[in-house]
Image (cartoon, rainbow, N blue to C red; front, side, top):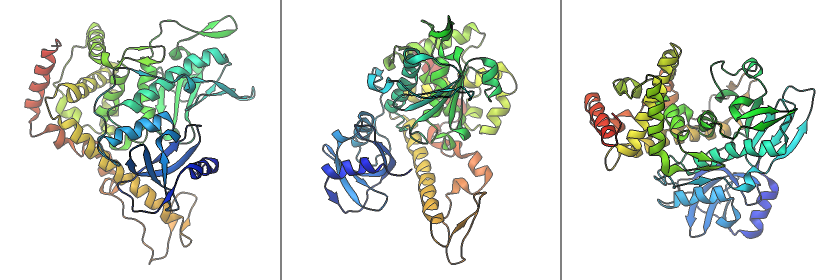
Length: 431
């Protein structure tokens, strides 16, 4: 991403230039208090000032007040353990509420020649819609999206959700037929497609219903499906290094927080869990941890195979994943190995990020020729960066999510872990 020149100039006007060695840099796209963006690396935090390194190697200090509220929260999460810390905050706030400024709606395009004729924007999302929903209805829709992003910003997983460009992309379809025709799964109410970097949903999953010639919002619709798929979109950069049980378990987890009018009540997750179990039991699915060992080491390919075998099998995968994640986060005794495991996953992601940046710099060299298919030619004396182990083979990439499972097992056998899970749930009233 190119630097926003006006953002950099504004920073220069209020920041002192420094030249120093980076310390565990945190690379990301930063946003200032006026919504302007720039890609830099955070290298230090000192009081109310953050030090960044720019792409040309220069360093600068910037008052935290010059950054967006979300970026200030992100930095404060790192500050607990120092700049570049891996763990950050490990607790949910009691509530998370979206800032009203983030859901201000702008209609930026109206083109009846396109299927997705109407383009709306909030602070962090761009919506392409088949029908004109109007500013008031789009504000209600955008509130769910922005609130979910805010929720993931506060998540103790410290994933730091970043869009692939200026905003996350969402496509909204008037009917299930047009949604499926555009690539949405026929048995779903919404989907995030990683390789296309977009979220898709039919109007009915947004709680929209016809009101005369326009659309209105149903008063009591459930946002669970939206929150589930939006959680995937917010975690887009982490999907290659996470096991499928965490990917789907975390989405079931976040979609179980009580939600109302742009506010998630994170302190109500235990109630959300019990309501989730109650609903599944009404469908003939009692809580079951017999397949925990298989779930922990399941690859993405195997997950898809099991999920494709039928609705019940798919439901059990989601159900078991939620139970497993909740146990590791909330019930697994003191000094939970979950956080050590997540730090190890984060280190693997950092290896991939460092390699991607090194390759980006390599192919920009004058003697390197890049072909249209992405392959490249270079002189024999110019060596490309060595890929991390995770990219050594298809098998290594496929099993990346289970790379650090020994940390989660913490010396326990599968039998011992299953017993601990059953006993822990029994103590909170779930058998």
